[in-house]
Length: 259
Image (cartoon, helix red, strand yellow):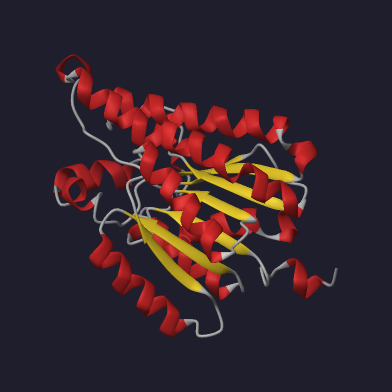
């Protein structure tokens, strides 16, 4: 393999969940730029179709397609993989990016609320990995990247259920990296801190809270979706062929901040 080809994804097909905006969209764009064909999944079908059309125009040499579905719903996950099979696609990359949150004190959560967080943030990724396994194993050099969070590594003010779900996602990453290594599947994760997305806007709109965030971030700024996508893309590349079971923080130094 040449040096140039180690940094390309030509001939690969990637599935990206939560791909219509924010980190997911940035990941889809980054993977397409590196040569991959990209399958986009998100709940908002109208917006997703527009995103798909925009990416197809931006990358005319790639096969860009979209499927509207809620990955927290079992039947819709199965429909997604039926669609992938009907297209004749064979996945070699899976990016589990879909996620949600409800911020509350621990005692204020209703059972339905925290169970829904686990359904979306953990169980959807677990099941998608299982559904994708056969296709990924066919390639012998496949990659899964789970989008976790610094909330799964230390305390931040996102609510305990969210932190629990991301910690579980990180542990799933470690387990599958060991269990599926013999199948030629590398499994890694990224753990972002505050990234400039639609979901983070309400919290960061509070000037006092933003100041606190920046005070705890050595690089003194909010991250961009493209900066997370770059780390995700690296973990998918042949250049990262000896990296598995890792969780790379994309956090401006937040986790390393001392006193």
